[in-house]
Image (cartoon, rainbow, N blue to C red):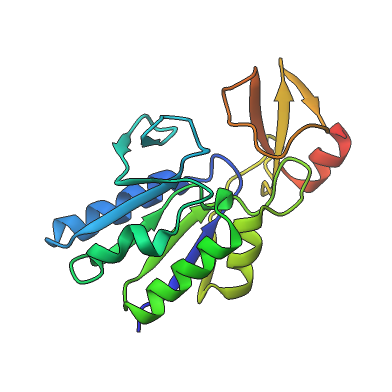
Length: 189
């Protein structure tokens, strides 16, 4: 039976790079994959972009109103794996559909994303995955102090901020993020 996977980590932990490697591995074996990302993630527009400088066009941009199941229905007998980048931005019902796809269509669905936002609150898609994914794996990165980073601290114009809307894409509105350990986050706060 195929599974629903959630691979999460702070920013700069290599999530998109790992997704691209998995895609390569499947395709090298002659297997078909589909890559999805939420349309709210405007970084790279219709591409997923790794901080290493590699990118790839996605097969589908998913809006918050889309049924993932309806979009992928015609591929259920021809695809070997579904890969989702920035999964935290999906809605709970869309995560439930990914679970159903993995179980009922017997297609592995591997999701990559953040667990929490810049205030350490859960994203809707991530919260649901933490509850129902068959497999949960943390991809690790480090804070500037050398400890394991767990928080994506938001900076606006180079200054740390602790207010604002949950979803602001890195590089937009003078926003950037820095991966921090819990202690460094609390010291900045």
